[in-house]
Image 1 (cartoon, rainbow, N blue to C red):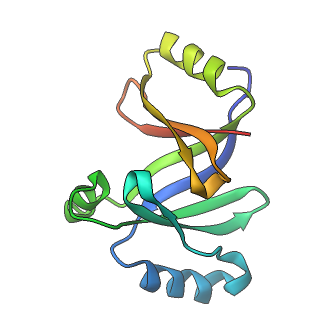
Image 2: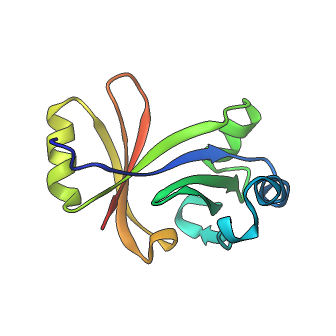
Length: 133
């Protein structure tokens, strides 16, 4: 991979976005917290908290009982995935597949100005997200 994955965020699940935003605003100030973005294709709302230059915590809140995220929150899962920006998402996915990563479907995310994204499971079942630059 030769450092083609540029760290962007750690995704965390929250039960209540307003409560989570309030907590992170108290910790890091209101300028560190992005507006909430609805991701219709995944039935979630997301918000980014800037931790350092190009390093964020992504708060993920379910918008419906049918979403995978809703089921995970009920099981008290909090840390969800690690997001990386990549120059060429197609070739990066191909390389990761050679390393036994299992890709899900591509999607275009409102959180990243409609850019193409994909989730993949690592061989040890950790979830990563790739975001095309």
